[in-house]
Image (cartoon, rainbow, N blue to C red; front, side):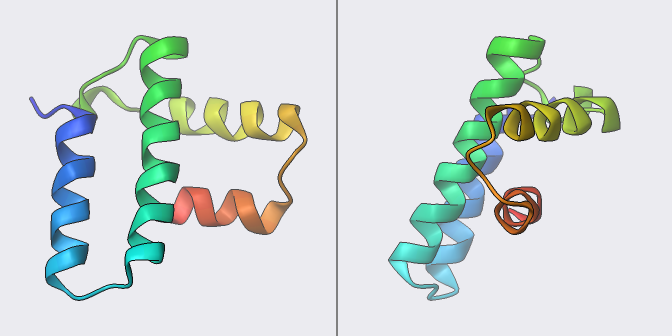
Length: 80
């Protein structure tokens, strides 16, 4: 099984190898770690194989509940 944290760091490395701008990579990694924190703290999920569609929907619902992000930002979070 693969930890979500491991895949985030793998993503960072791949993006750096591809020559992506540091600002872009940092933003994506920030979004991914926010997702990882939610799945761990709120859902008790740390392995990527355990993530379900319901978990993703709960994350979207939580971000909407906070009300600090517009739909475009939510879509960017999901894309990351």
